[in-house]
Each structure stands twice: as structure tokens, then as C-alpha cells.
Picture 1: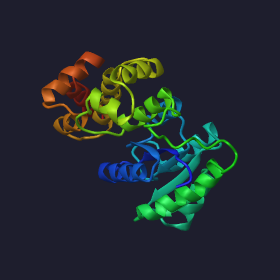
Picture 2 (picture 1 turned 90 degrees about the vertical axis):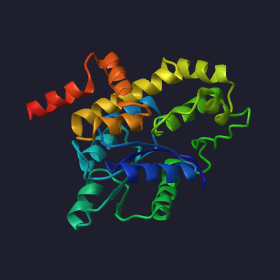
Picture 3 (picture 1 turned 180 degrees about the vertical axis):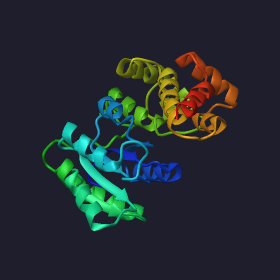
Picture 4 (picture 1 turned 120 degrees about the vertical axis):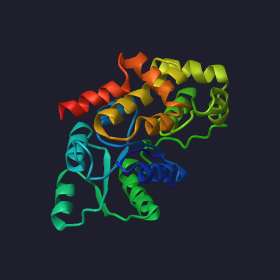
Length: 252
């Protein structure tokens, strides 16, 4: 691979999203996943993003609208649509919305990887000095800030129990204290607080927009018991997740 891209995968199928994100990371890219487009604006502001890989059939705002909006906000961003919709009219609408490449499912990771590599030649053309360095976490050349940004990308893609701070520091080539200090400077809170807040915000979206059982949401967030999740949710938002879901259902 000639360069490393920052990629957001927007796919509402949890297993497919997780597999795609993991595969892109194996290819050397910095990838993170979203179940829908609700948090896209915040993600684009939080970290540099080179490429969107998105489905068309999404809850809420569909992929066509997301592609058009992302292209308007960031004209140089790469956009690959991956969808089951294979009608010519859908493909034309996809390209009209700003997509660079339109792939139909089922799509192998090899085909997606090849499409990304081809698109990367436009996004990070060789010899221009714009391509980011490959992150060698054992090298003194890579700054602590770059490592912490990579750490943040990794953390927001992890489900279940969060790795220990000591383990993360070792994985990303920083001392434990340096890891947390630089992360706090970059994102305004400690690693633990950031991950907890990020996950609870995503949980609130899931409670509002899906019927996934609270126990399942709690497990995905790494809580050992749903009551612990309920308590953390209540501390952050001032009400329990069950009450939020009940109000949503009553308003339908």
C-alpha cells in the first residue's frame, strides 16, 4: 500500500461494519465505523478524514444525501458507495451525489481495497508531499500527537471492554503518563472519560433510533451488567435509557 488513509465506514449492519473496519485496518488504513450519518459532522470535525465508504440504505439520512452533504463540506474527500442497489438510476444518482466509485454488494474486501488504492492516488498523489507518513510506533520520528490521534481512531472503533491504559500505551509506543497527558491536551479529557462519553453518546443514539435491547447495548459498550450502564447513562444525561426509549415509543 502506497499510503495510509483515514477512513469512515458508514454501514448500519453491525457485523458487516465491524468486518469492513477490521479489514481496512489490516490493510494499513486508519478506519472507524458509524451505523448512520447522525454523527458524521462531529467525526469530520474531530479528525482528518480522507475517505467515506458508505451504504445507501441507512436509517435516517440516506447515503445519497450524506454523499452530497459531505462533498459540499469537504470538496476533496473521497467517497465510495457500497450498496445492494444495482439499478442504473441508482448508480447515476450515486455519482451525481459526489461519489467517486460505486460498488454493488456483495463486495469482496479485495475489490474494496483495490478501489481505495486507486482512489488514494488522487487523494494522496505520490511526490506531492501531502501523503502522511506511515505510523511506525517504534520510531522517534512519529510525534506523540500523531500516535494519540491514531489511538483515538482505534478506540472509537473498539466494542466491548476497553483495553487497559497500560496496554494502550505500550501498543502505541508511549509511556503511560505521556499517553494520557497528550490525549488530554488533544481532546480535552482523559482517555477513560473520552471513551465513556463517546460511547454513551452513541448509546443514546441507539436507544433513540433502534430497538436493540438495553442489555445488548450495555454489552457492546463493555459494561459487565446492564445496571452499570443504566447508572452511567443516568449520570450523563439525567435520566435512564429505559425512560428515553419509553418516551420515544409513546411519541410515535
